[in-house]
Length: 115
Image (tube, rainbow, N blue to C red; front, side, top):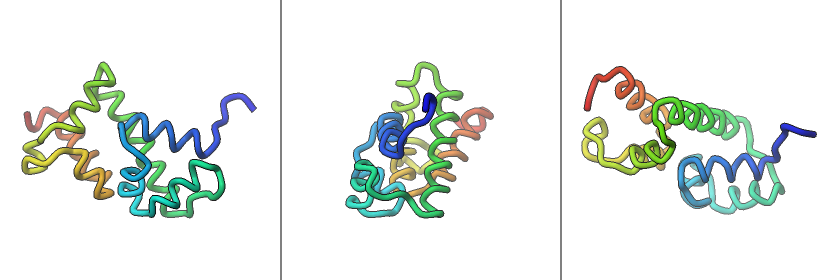
């Protein structure tokens, strides 16, 4: 059907959007590398909590695209040290599964609360 994507395509698009490897996606989703590889092969599907986290990652990609133009600026922001994170990078929070913290930093950035 036109307009539909497989799980593996969805997972790959998230990895491309964040510039991360399957291992790093496993860290973000707090799952095993093997599980992510099985998703990439369309062998299994995420359970409820992981599907929720994938939805949160989709929303974060959308927010990054809304906040930054060109898209390369979003990746640069994710990989740059940030005062909001005490000198750590937003990507460090993301790799710890803290999508909420990255969203909060974006909200602050969009509100011009910090530089």
